[in-house]
Length: 510
Image (cartoon, rainbow, N blue to C red):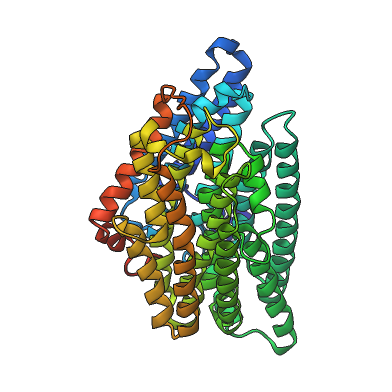
């Protein structure tokens, strides 16, 4: 009787290790992963002539996962929390999480639409392709909700590892194999550096949860201060690889050229969002105590990244094979520099500056995926991917030419692409508000440099075509991807305050 009483008392005093799971909060990730497994298993039993159905199952799954964000729009859910500290949770569905998950899942949905035709035409293995794409999207959707360093690294790798295989999916293509190898080596290096940094941070703080790490870094014992600073620096270096920040950008152009075009577009948007999301979480939530270290470092990285990216894009020869993809690749490096500016500004004027990065990322996602969708359409008849191949596109495909012209003007920040101008002004203002006047000047100079190569490509679309034009009917999934991204860009240009409304104020759970 006494033993039973003692056990009852102990069980009452000890915190329960059994947690309830908020299935609605994790539904976007779970649905995406589950559909990926369904596709993988179905591939084993479907006859070859029925394999295209796997693409439509994947599209339906991504659409369903995106729809589950609606019931979560209050941004007040969390799960997998510590029993002794309910504020320390591993998964948080706040407004920041929901906006990034929408970007990731909607971007993956557009990628899937463009991929339907690409998988069929290039005879890539359908089951593997769709499983890898959904797996990567699931990891990318998990990452913004991650609020401990272990989950953050796992989500980062779940998003990255399938992407290696997707880049090398074109079997027998030397460029594809080289691109996959270069991407793999750079990402593995980044992960190793990040893990070393995380281990140092854990050794200095004794916790992996971001909120607890932030609290304990405020009062690190003197003998552990150097270890903590080294951990912060190494973690940031690892994420800088993922964001393609200079000097960790070397894998970008070759990877984009070697990858299937839909995957190049996927990496330019979702892959970049993964890196920036991780960088935001570790800087403004976990490491605010060391903002005097990462703030200036990120400001310098932003200046170097936008300058080198735009300078390299400026040098692309229109007649060189793959010049169109290379220009988009270097342009994405330059855009990464702009995305880094508000994160650096957050070190000086508070984490609400992160809203500027999120607003810019939403704009960039819509127009860049649209540009890659048009590139995939043009590549059906002109597979060399040269900028000169776009000469006279308006005479051949008026709607595609108008869409691409609008996307390029948005990226340049020129009317009628008001959303691009709005996004750049928002980022510029964040630098000025943080007292980073020199960085704002560097950004202004780079915007002017970028105008040249964006306008040169835009003008080419409306010039008189050379020779006979070969026109084929546009596959409707690719056309749908172009239309969706174009409409999104036009609507946002007409009402840019929609993005401002979503990203203003605090995005993180208090």
